[in-house]
Length: 466
Image (cartoon, rainbow, N blue to C red; front, side, top):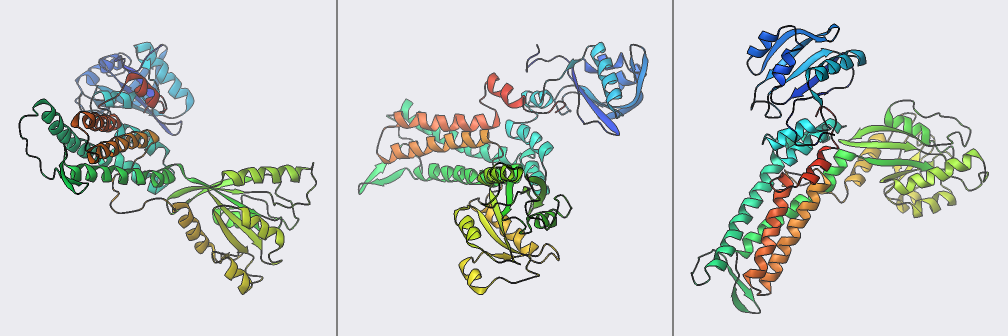
């Protein structure tokens, strides 16, 4: 079994099967190994970094594919090691044959995320930028891509390092005061008023509070970042034949769900995805909910699944049949449904009564037939999904993973404790460990403070070839 941290030459396919496949190699001596199965070994050995060589890859029984080999010399490569990217023809058979040739030459199969792990270990990326690599791979919308690119460019790393550097300086002053208590060490803004008396805190209260505010701002960014990255589930619910499937098809702009005038046509939920203001939304069309369905039939099973899905949804579009009007069953369902947008569908046939619009100010009138109200409905959906998330220009560096969030929370709690101790007039001996804990938590975000177990768990979630 191989482990993360091995330095032997590795190889893995970095792209899915298609017209072309890219196979990545890295590690000391990898170019020499590759030269042993390449039709132009001298040219490959002499090639400068960041150049491309054309030739053939050979297996045990002769040539297996024509390829372009992009040569990288340490340290100017993704991993910081020497290596090469092999661009060959796509298809499973070609990829398997080239990988077999590489194994016979002495390459080991790369572990998931091992290329990015080596980039981190060789100082090419910090952990925040390493994590953003998988964010880029999984990005489903332009907004998710844009935010991942920000982290890859180092925006979050710079913000974390700036806060940490300021804390290190403050911690140094506190510890210097502990080592040399008899010396007077001038520090600006140390005076703090406590119980109507001047109190000299062991550190600059205002500076630490400002750093804590910066961490809190980062924490506020997490939910919005996660929304753009992971998306949300929106469920269309309502009585049978209210036009749920027609609305579902109209929002997706495709005919995914069967539309019929017969109530109960949709027996199980069906879903599709679309981008809503940069948020990847999974939209689910559910079976119509009615109380008089046969208790042991297929429709009843569909209704049961619909109710389960409503519990998981971040947003519910409750569809009222505009042709029939609202009924007590609709009102009862609306009253107990959370994160709700009431939708008066079939508005081309009938308008909602004024009393209903007064009762439900957020009611959206739509027509799946002519597209009326769909833009407004999308705006309402986006607004509800973003409710409770922070969208200020001041948040330039957002937290992209739960790991980053938890460590930022630890640092913020440590600073809150340090401020509380200082405000209560307690000694620097008790305060210094809190500041040190905050520094260590911030260092763990970028990878300055890490353990082998944490790194292995994190990078093992990556794709092969990344």
